[in-house]
Length: 234
Image 1 (cartoon, one colour):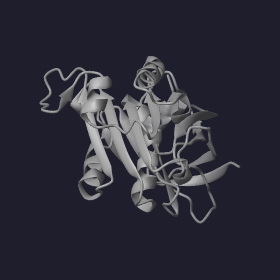
Image 2 (image 1 turned 90 degrees about the horizontal axis):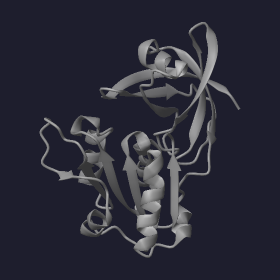
Image 3 (image 1 turned 30 degrees about the horizontal axis):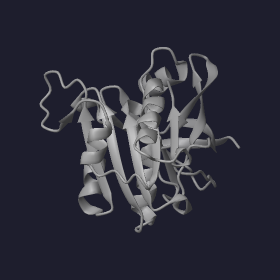
Image 4 (image 1 turned 120 degrees about the horizontal axis):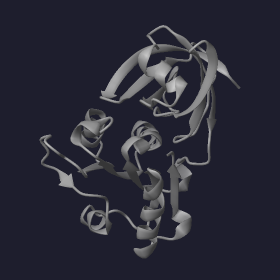
């Protein structure tokens, strides 16, 4: 059901990505960690719609969060980045999608993200951090450059205080940016070095080639296909 929500705050995550905290203003809204919503706005003189992932946990009350990457081609995204302001009302309809995690699915979770593909996985990680203390999560996150690590500070803060959470970043094209962490794409060596639990459940989200490549890699390592889930957005 479509409901109105008010933009409570806007946070610049990276040069091309913003997060929007949306006030539910007392309305009921339910979703599963990893799902997305249709977002309706009045953009360029007409009502537009676009699908965005929820990056908050469903255990958080009274508000939800969307994280949106800039796109020249999408009018709603241009509106969100260029015109949307604190106090504006937009409409959301959801949550939707079969890519989600719930506690009963397993207590050992590996999240593999590429670029903006971190968004549904962030919702899952926050869900675990906020209410499922017996679950172990390892996030392995690949980006082009250090400045493109979305939620970096929040991820480091969660991993620093939650013994069940481990976050690994790897950069494929550091360029001139200072970086002392891992470099290169996610491969079997990185997974083994970081002790990814091959007996757990895997969630993968990133560019189109990444999902299939990671699935084949995990199958080659002996992970059963039914324990591999992936979503690709572009």
